[in-house]
Amino acid sequence: MKKENGKYLLCPMAKLQKIIAGKWKVYILWILAHQTIRYGELHRELAGITQSMLTKQLRELENDGFIIRHIYNEVPPRVEYALSDLGRTFVPILKDLNQWGQTHLK
Image 1 (spheres, one colour):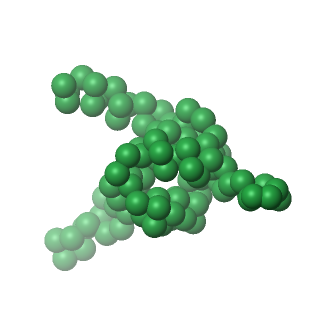
Image 2: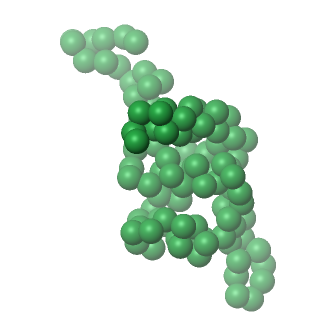
Image 3: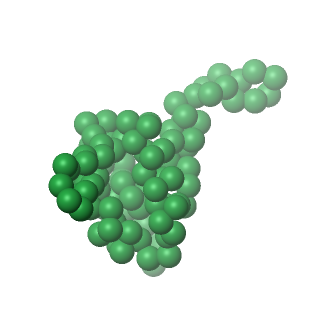
């Protein structure tokens, strides 16, 4: 990590924190690590999240390359979310976070 004028420059850890910042992003990634899921199912899985917040978090994760949104040309339209190749590389980190939480946050 490089420091300039006593402050850390945008290192990989700072970039990652910016990507996964947000109350719901890690949990969304954890759910998607186990399944491809439709928007409505994901919304039901995340008790307490508003539709607008879920949409915002999903868009940010998609823009950062962690998830893929697939829109099916059906009536009514069906949208599914899945981890991208980049998102799948993050799964071992999610598993470590889950294990740490099980061990230390009882």
